[in-house]
Length: 172
Image (cartoon, rainbow, N blue to C red; front, side, top):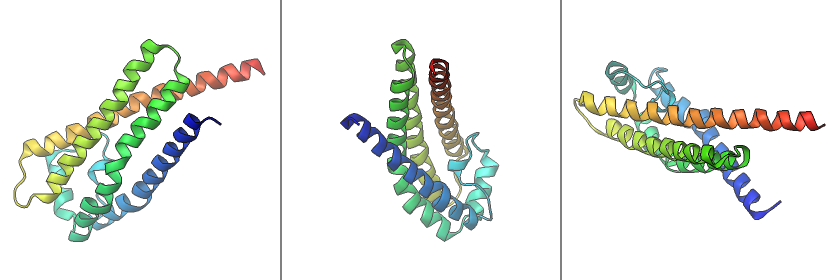
């Protein structure tokens, strides 16, 4: 195995470990502290102003501290690592360069939207008193962009995996 492949699979394993820590640890704990309401990160279709206000009203001090602390720290690394994993998979599975480049840009766009979402959610969690509707709507849009851009790249990777499997099956 080449050094590049070892590096890729190390990044992949690290990304999956962080994802597991968030999805299996911090995010369910935050939801538990918010009377079962889903954290912003788990709402790929976004959320309305009323839904955001309901979540923030239900979220206790423990959940808020968890969201701004360990969840925020994990999500500091996750977007960049996920973008690297997606770009590596596109590079390995999608052959035409004219298709690779837009998918690279979409993966990077998803990463940027994720960091923007993280910053806006941190602001929502930190502000006391009435929150501007525009801030909530902007955070929701960042969540939707993150989910949408990442989903397009993941679908392309899935198509690449199916194609590679089909080619391998046909030659055996």
